[in-house]
Amino acid sequence: MDDELQSNMEEDDPLPKLRNNDRSHQARYRNTLSIRPEEDQMSEGSEVMDGSVVSSVTDKYGFISGETEGVDPIVDVEILRRRESKWLEMLSEWDSYMMKNYKKVRERCRKGIPPSVRARAWLHLCGAKYQMENPENKNTFRKLCASRGEQRWTDDIEKDLHRNFPTHELFGGEYEKIGQGELFRVLKAYSVLNPVDGYCQAQAPLAALLLMNMPSEQAFWCLVAICDKYIPGYYSPGMEAIQLDGDILFGLLKKVAPRVHKHLKSQEIEPILYMTEWFLCLFARTLPWPSVLRIWDMFCCEGVKVLFRVALVLLKMALPRKVRRKCPSMYETLDVLKHLPANICSEELLIPEVLRLNITEDDMEREHRKQLKRRKAIQQEKNSR
Image (cartoon, rainbow, N blue to C red; front, side):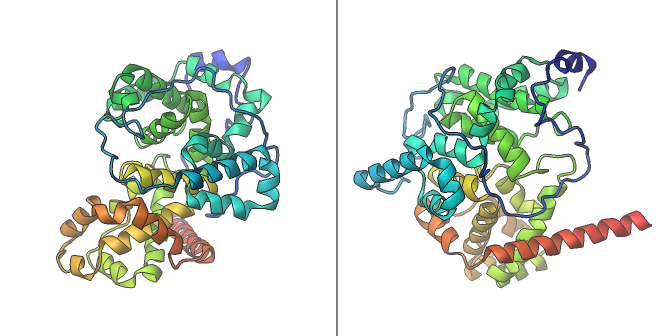
């Protein structure tokens, strides 16, 4: 952080609890794959929508090209209304549900959050609403936006603005300047909050997706929760956290689809070659929009384990025996994984497969401990030389 920015903020630092003074370039690994939304100090109340930037949509999701048309399953209106009613009741009694009936919350997230309450639900699930309503954070977002960000980060953010969902009305249509302006504000604010990691290109689609669903301040706090709590270290220099999760994914694949595992291993295909964009962008750049939203519904509730489940299903279904036979080298295999067959990515097929995948949370935690122990042993050996 440069001297001018430091002097501007030291009198009234808006980040007394969020700013980590001990952040460094060392790898940050989570202690567990588990994630539970905060069960204390969660607040209730209606959303504050002041200052929001709302885009009228050209199709259901706001994409100008209508590229999502025809991929949505038919939803019974009465069922949708009942789900909305249940969610509204749950949101009004959030603390009670999270402390006493978390499994019900998880079940409803897995069924899909109704679009009308999705933004509110995400805010509650990831804890962003608590951060927003913390009196100490009242003006944090505004002050971060007003701060002078580090030039290298702001330059990179500017360069990437036009690359994020240009077929969406908010970023490439009638509201392009407004949407890109809000995207810049959110990403710059995070780079000021976390000057060590700064900005990573893969954060932009996350922030853009959030802005499609909520105002900029809410999107910012959700981004903070995702980057710092759900996927810590993913955007840090060296990307060691994502490499660790790639090793975990590969270890789990041996249990879920041993022949696919053997195929990838025989061709010496490192997980980082195919899973990086999946995990860094939370599948926002990989899957059809209905599938992306369903995955985010579950991810906000259950955390990174959802990403593993989705990735395992995609690997298993993308590389059946007949496809593996047509992939004599890593180039053909990686091409299949880069251009996933449309049929396996649809919400109707993918989500049920993710939910019925034969892998337990204990399996994931066991593999996580195994890979973490292995990686630490390798590091200790390097240090002893």
